[in-house]
Image (cartoon, rainbow, N blue to C red):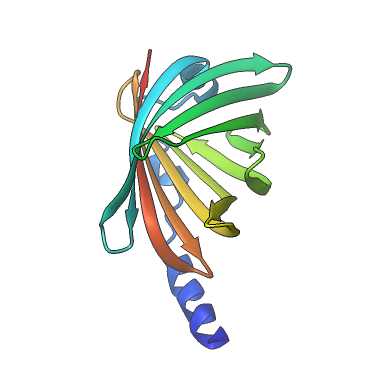
Length: 171
């Protein structure tokens, strides 16, 4: 089993796209400018099979607090459940970002280039009384000054378990 997991991890790492390939794409993604203020988002979670198992809506309020960009995200899911996630993001140089949230293990790391933002972290996902550590490989792409598309692969032990697709619109 260990050999299979290692082989799958190696294969999936070969397919990693470098965010800098988008360096000339417009509009340029200014993370701080885009998320300061109010943003609304809609999304779905799909299993590996493609089946949509959850739909959701998110209201986001972004503001600067010292050297942090704080994103207060309020989720409402299709089953009526609600969730809040508060991200605290810091710019660590020209294009590098780091972030923390209560349901994220350790520090999320990301890089902006052109119209794209690559963001990786481990999400602590509660399911039926058990908390799973899910690796999130998150990509955001500016479509225009108001619209952002987000595609996230969710995996465990290098095995893709599903995808999250989110469409953001500044208000």
